[in-house]
Length: 294
Length: 278
Image (cartoon, rainbow over all chains, first blue to last red; front, side):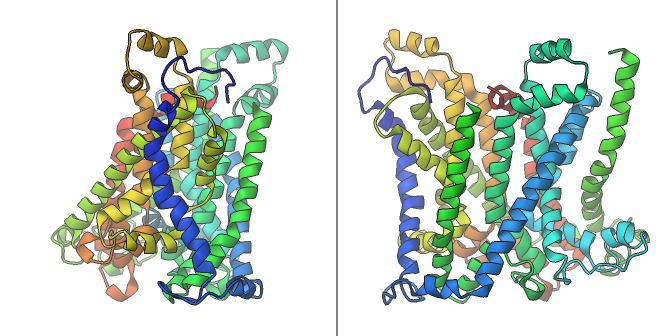
């Protein structure tokens, strides 16, 4: 944040005049529900007047195997999507830049089409890819390799990979677009200077492109993490609101939703609140990285 | 690099992009072709029946006539909610971002961190208390109840803080010297950043268009629901909707965001390039 005071006139309340609408809605639709969530998590399972039960829901969670399954799945899912998507998108952006200039916008647009598609539709398109023996994945890759067809959506060993694959399919093109935009913003002079120092394209990439792209990559990763933890629609349609066989695809939001469906509001809120420390940790990590970037 | 080397490199990278392009486009092609297929054709192995035997528009007209869901209601609801949310989010985030970028005041850092925290807490996690609060406000089963909670966005605030930081200070000072009020100064700056306003509006429109969980909790009447809810209902096996109708609805659900992006995409990219690296 710039330390210098750029304000030259205006009363002291001027900034708050601009902030007020935002703060009002922040309070109304974020702070109040959050407090409501904390309160709900301390009361028996119903809306309205309910008995105060203290930390009973949290204690129950500590012994709830499904809660830990959901947490673990969400964590693996999120991590896997970042680890796969970011390098892949970097590579694709690099390829797009090397390809013909005229074609670039068309190609970039085609690649990010899945990001524009509602997750519910994506899940249905993906059913075709995963659908039993006739699915594309089995027909094109698994069976030609001489392997047994995989039952992607029923076999607990493959459900989570299926969900990750769906995310990769959904977001890679979009992130490629961001990275491409970032690459095009890097001043040419940097490359000219680098060319004087080294002829290796790889080293130019490593010493110029990558450091310059750091804010973009950070943004992309943060976006994927948040999206990973809030994934609902895709898993909902693909697995019909369940966690799949043996809960292998049970994600945190799905679990919260399942509890809600049985009016288990207290317990559902306890799960949400229990995730807050994780989020704060992530926030701290982001700020830390931002400062190092600056 | 020589022109020939450049062409070679271009062709090679095109070749490498090819498989990804196919992986993305084939499912969409299959979706559009699926509109014309009968159920038996639909479930045949792809290699056998990728193209339909006849191009019959029955499924499309069934969908549009509201045989399965009140399609026009649902479609326009989605448009209203997403447009309203995008407009609201742009106005709130732009004003807040302007305040963060251009003023110093007490508690600024704390408020900014709060805005970042907003990004990191998925709204979906607090859907239940949000839902009961929306009920308490008397907004249950109304489009406003879906639209308003979505207008606060941390991403938007951070984006616009970044955007307004790049507006030259001299510009603001010139406006102030002319005796403009603070609001007037802000309004004169706005045209300078309109690509950013448009870009963010587009992103937020897309996010709102996809939102599933909160509308599902808030909206109960069928004619008040939004597109993702109608889609989930069409896809539900127990409804026995023909596959062709499902694919027609899916295709219609993709068109608005795809068109919007196609139209804005150049502005969006240049505004990103300006911002991301600096």
